[in-house]
Image (cartoon, rainbow, N blue to C red; front, side, top):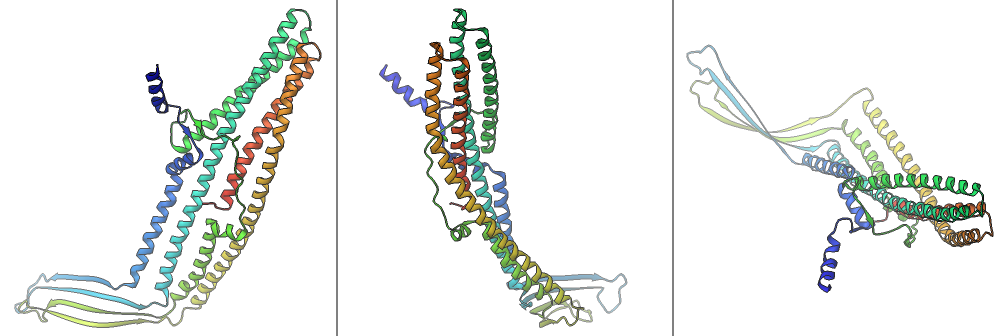
Length: 414
């Protein structure tokens, strides 16, 4: 028997359905399965490659051009064919500041993509938290309804016995049967809500939707209250606000880009040429080379430079106002989120004592009715009060867990 118990203890953790899923583990599973997060990461890689591409504009460019021709009618002294091969190296020395501005724009876009990736991760983490606590709440509500049905059935046994003995009227039997039918219907609804929460839980992490789950944490477990952050700390941590700041910088940089297209442009390079001697009597070839400088200066464009720069400045101003509006929105979210944490925690502390009193009242009412000291209406009211308060307890704990997760999302807690 001792050996059998040891084997059972060793194999029990390996049996399906016995492993518990904790909140942090579930977060990692959801993050690992999220298509939305993978898309955000792919976008970050795209902007990273574009940043490297923009960097190549600082380096010289090598190009090669060539052509070959053959005359259909030959002349006695000249070869009928000719060719030219021309390699060229060009370096842009000045482009009106456009090269550096374009590279800075690529850097800002890559930084924006990284912040958006972090913002997506925060949203997915909050979705995982909500789904986890929702499943826990639905499981507790289903258990409460099952206990409610059991309580009514136990009372029905007492009523049926007293009715058969002739102590009570038929009305008590009808009332308890109606209450039992209503409770069983609500239990079926609780079962449906639990199944829906279970499906959402499994699909979000990429497992079969009907896979049984045993949660390692419950909404009734003590929840540590998150530490409150100041507005400056919240703004520094919020990816969406950092994205707004980067977009403001990109809008200012866009003014330089708009202006650069109308500034002088200077390029220098070296050009080579391999071609037959002219006239091509012997087919001998020669190599030539040249250094060159190319200067392009826009002179008049009907105010295009002014209008382009003005549009870029207006866009920058618009982005700055959007950043200010976002700051006020974050301030409002932080204040409301913290109030939700404090108020929901206070409700959790207040409903616990109410549930204990309702339980004692239900026990006392059931006993008094069995002894003939009270009416069936008093017992039914005590049952109704008990399930309502029990539901309030579940709702209060669920709201507190969600409020804590929501506040951590608001302050972008790492």
